[in-house]
Image 1 (cartoon, rainbow, N blue to C red):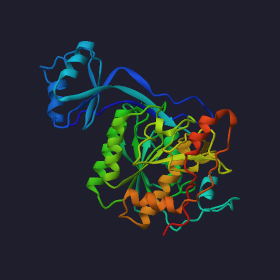
Image 2: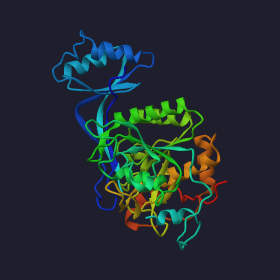
Image 3: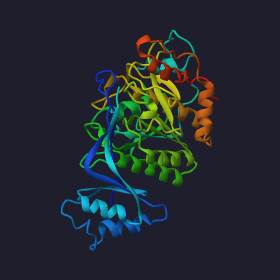
Image 4: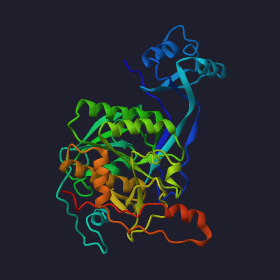
Length: 395
């Protein structure tokens, strides 16, 4: 029986407009992720190293298992000697610090923008599909599933936060879900929204919980291979976690479309997790003038832009709405459009969805202007895509 899962601190991307602080990923003191060799039996190794009465680590007064995943285990409260002992074990490939990460924070002018190629906006949103039959997994702070905008289409899938319900206690996840599939604010107004809660009331969580959440969605896909699925992750941290690539690649290989926010630190998205992962669709934020939002991360790891400034969507208190800025708000536009493609083509792979999305996107709209005093940043930004998300061409 699985006991827990592995941790790293993660979080919603910080509020782009109201908080411009850099989204740092911080090391959790005396908390580690132990990765096993590929030929090691993880169940037997976990038992031997951490749960057996003969284990010197398990006998330590401060020792605890934080999260347990298929590839690794997150532990805390070990001594330096126990750390070295574990490092020498033949079943252990490596031990890394665990990290804390945070959310990519931020009306529906965004819907208006993605159903027409050119400005000015025409105050309408039209698409031939609703995302019916598609499941979108919102890996975030939870969803206020009773919100009238969700029409009963939001359910709890997995809750990784102790002492909190599956419902949203922060607002970020509800806002993201509203943009994906809300009746008023959503791109895909008939989609099924699955709540996967990995971030707490402060908007923070652990990378290890995120890995477990992704494993959960992969298992759901294996159990229901005919069901089209999308993952939205509007979260991350300014830290490259190499192991994170493997689990996203596995999700994509399983047939799941993975959409991630580029981040709100105005840095190269290739320096940001999970935005750097090539198999995911990484989304930057654009404003009303089709310019990159000043906070949006940029660079070759950004696949396309979507509206991410002053986006109105569902709020976690009562049946209200709220306006946020951020790549967190841009990404769910793309996740919603992915659901529209999958309703039209339920057997499509992630690559087929992305190729269609790229073909239908409008190019030459996202323009980076020269700042003489920031030439290095300019040339890095110039490598960013000029594609802007569109939803009106799906067939």
